[in-house]
Image (cartoon, rainbow, N blue to C red; front, side, top):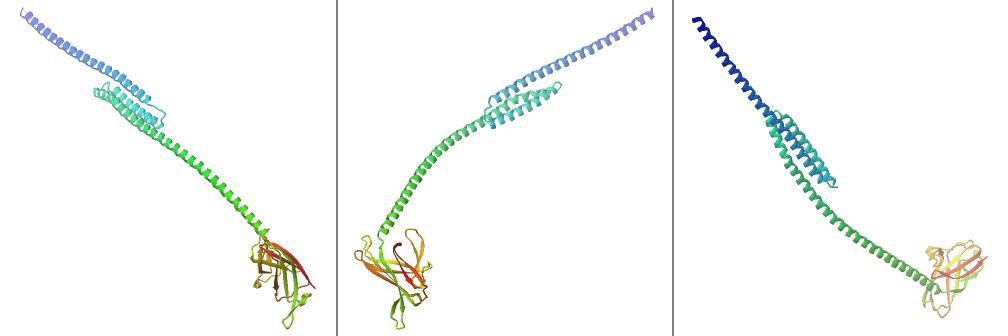
Length: 332
């Protein structure tokens, strides 16, 4: 009986230990289950948060793109700025997306991602402000450009008007110059006509050869070898258009071979004919006192201290540049 009682007590003790052990195991398992449930709940919450952040990121990103795109104009500088801002937003979106993906197991990354998403709005506001500022500046530039174009058009109109006036003035001046030239031409022609009409004609243009004797007394001769001097005489005619007073006459003595006898030291020179402008040499020049109502006689003496050749000599008399008479003489 004593042995049976001890066995019963030992069994009871063992059973109690086993029960306590089972209760401990159950308590451990229950604790682990509760802990796993908490971890699963936390993970589920983090996954849900991550998905929410993804949706919110996409929403914020595309709203920002839409708002920026709505501000696009035909201004190249403004569109370039918008494109650069879109690139910056895309880079920001990628950065936030990486934070969200890593945040599935990191609460801090999810919080940082949410904070970055909230910054997209403020970043967009900054972009919008910058775009609006550029728009305003472009508006001012456009307004200034319009004003400058108006001023340019006005100046071009004034310049065109000035050019028209200048062209009219130049045309008028050219007309006046042409008219003046015509008047001067007419005046010159009239003057030339008057001068030509006032030329004193001469008649009886004669030439005689003279030999100076040893006594100093001159004697007429017909021979060239004996000739020491030549005397040219002519008779002036009346001309009511010629003024009374001194009249100059140029005489040319032309030898048998067509050369004008001329010695500058004896008063010879060059005469420009009034009708042709030709320059001709003359032998001598003499001024006579002229009375336009009465004929007069003028004589020239040419004594060149040179030998004369045989043949026919021509005589030409000019007054006011015009031929006024001719004559000739012969030396044997």
